[in-house]
Length: 102
Image (tube, rainbow, N blue to C red; front, side):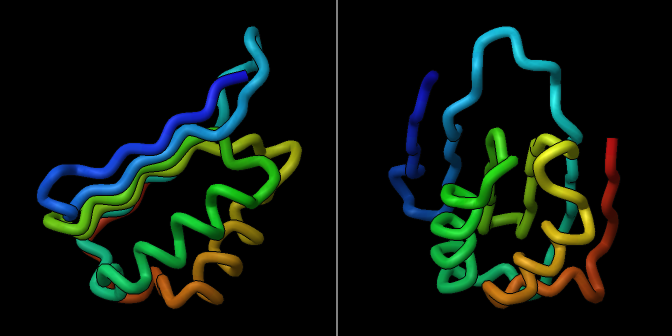
C-alpha cells in the first residue's frame, strides 16, 4: 500500500494517490477538461472527499486548467455515485468542455 500527497509550489495543483493493493487491476479512468465549478475551495473539498471515498485509487486536480483526473474501482464505486459525491462537494460537471470515461 502506498499513500502520497502533492501540492504544486504555486499552490495551484493538487494530486493524491490513495492506498491500492499491489497487483490490483487497473481502474476506470475519468478525465474532465475545464470544469467551471472547480475553484480552490471546491478543490480542497474534493481532496478530502476523494481521499476518503472507498474505490478511489488515485486522482489529480489541476486548478490552472480546471482539469480532473480520477481513477476508481468500478466494483467499489459506480460512476453515478462518484458524480453525485462530487456534486455534494460543489463540483458540478455542468458546462464542462469535454470528458472521457475509460
